[in-house]
Image 1 (cartoon, rainbow, N blue to C red):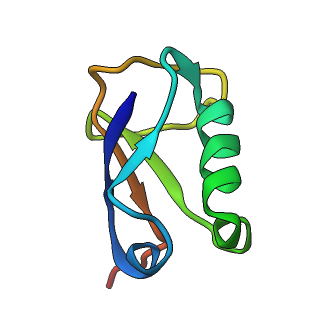
Image 2 (image 1 turned 180 degrees about the vertical axis):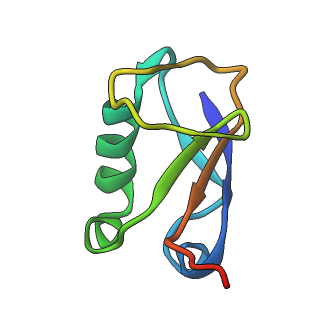
Length: 77
């Protein structure tokens, strides 16, 4: 199914807003799928956010109803 993904910063130059994804899948499977569709993504560091929460475990499961965002590194001051 096509899934809307929120993309921020420099990642908007690489990743389109919709990606074909089969659900359910794990975070690592999502990363692999994104790299397969967008090979340039392999050279970028980014965080995956699911339902407004940073993901820290690559084995977390993502469902079709989940909100997915990709965030580039950022710093604050």
